Amino acid sequence: MMERTASWDKIGVDVMGSKKVQDALDKAGLDYMVDMVDVTYTPHGKQILTAPNKKVTYRADTGEFKGIVGKDYKVCQNRDAFDFVNYIDADMEFIKAGESQNGAIWVIAKFPEMEVLGDKITPHLIFQNGHNGYIGIRSTICMLRVVCQNQFNAAFKDAANTISIKHCGDMDSKLSAARETIKRTKDYISHYKDEAERLSGIKISNQDLQNIIKKMIADEQEVKEGSVSEKKIQYFKECYNADDNSNFIGTGWGVLNAYTDFLTHMPVGRKCENAEDKRFIRSALNNKECDRMLKEIENIGA
Image (cartoon, rainbow, N blue to C red; front, side, top):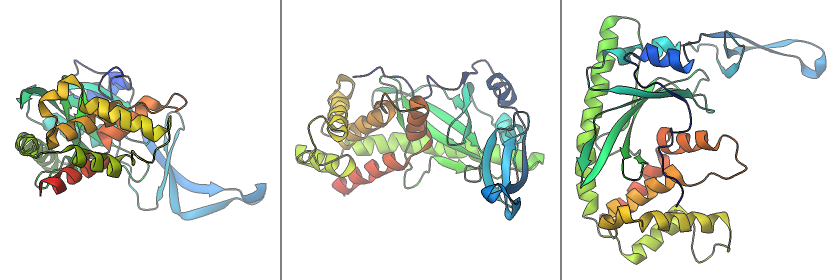
């Protein structure tokens, strides 16, 4: 079993002690400005052409390319995108901030630790902004299981874990966004507790587990020895049979715990560039895989 740390442990900048989101942005070097220019290019080195429906976004101080966007795209500077966070009335502490290779500028805050089915859980909020046309302003709720540092990032039927924020400059909109964020977060945390208890009551047989592995990872009967798929299956089984999951083996909650452990800590590969960043995107910013596993478990319990 590899070293278990949160996926954001080795990326970004430590911003603990920051009382305001602006402080976090300053410490992480993320309070920069973004500008736009028309797209121009030179085919075959001859004539300069323009693309009237496209623009390029770039970092104003360094010229770093951010993305190609539509003509109606509006830049929302990081300081403006995250400003509503300052109006969230909750016991929240900023811990990390950074920028991922997919273009997400992020700031992470954590809430006080709580207990679920005998486990210590720390809820986190990841605030995001982007300048490439497909990452907008949003907050993502990510539950961290302390004992093995695996991250639960799934949407429930009645409580989504990602909130899209419409940013405006007036005070009323900031307060509204802050209230909605904390309300949704509290709702999600409440549902998380209920879902953990419900899923712990779903019995998973050995055959059920084999079927889940086949659908979510690979068919164990067909994988080649030493292949990536075989290693993934082996790693998932290690997570499932780990001591810290022993109380939940044979249940839907045990399978989901193991899979979130798998997503959070499965090695990306030695030759993979930005491996830690990719792990963060996979387990903290993207909930698709976790959602798929949740549906497979629910199908068994239906």
